[in-house]
Image (tube, rainbow, N blue to C red; front, side, top):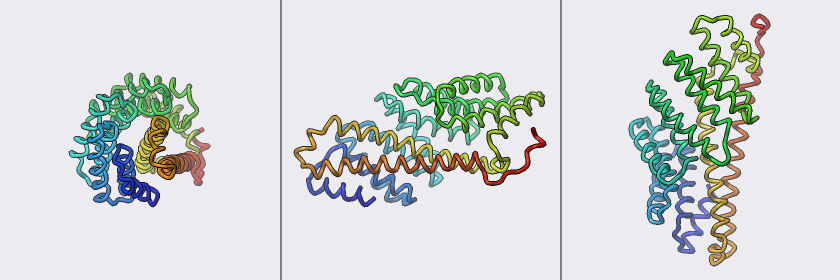
Length: 309
């Protein structure tokens, strides 16, 4: 936060008003949001939006609107949260911001899923998957996660063949990456186990349950799966947001490095420092997420599972 405030002070001293100042205000707003200081967060998001509108930075506007939606979600204002997500999504789609659009669609899908509106949730997850497939750098792990989420919704709807179809596609994507493969396969095995148990094929259901347990290494995690899912969702959303910001800042430096020369090396140093902070936050959250995943996969409690083998 201190570096962000120093950067903001530098902008004001140099009397510089551009879209990058808007992004700095947006970062400050997100720090306040993570600190649960929602009033300050909303104030800085609002200030950022005013600058983004002045310089027609549509990605910045969408980012702030989406983050305001997150704040409203924390405050229990679900209807407002959904409205803002949809508004941000429209901006992203109209400006080819498909990476951010996929994140927003995941968030909207989660809202619909929690409300029992499974068809709407499935539509959102499918759109998010399509956008992810269209990116140059495909995140096969994330696509697999989306497809698995869709399969679970079909399980709730008792449409098991559709669920199996999505699980098979998810497995194909996991063949192309090592990223979180073990975690994703655990969810897939659990889904298969549920499907076959629901269909009365208990032998096959048990086979997949054994595969799930073999990956879990602990039955203790199962009782905490809901809490773990909530924490996992929060971390992965933060990581995805920070990854977008890191890539955007690096591109800004590459595209506008000559513009910054007239403001002196000190100003450029501040900008480079901001990139460093964003990367540091992204790396820190990634390590925490990795540690969380490790805890899930390797619980210290080791109940005897020989009877299930």
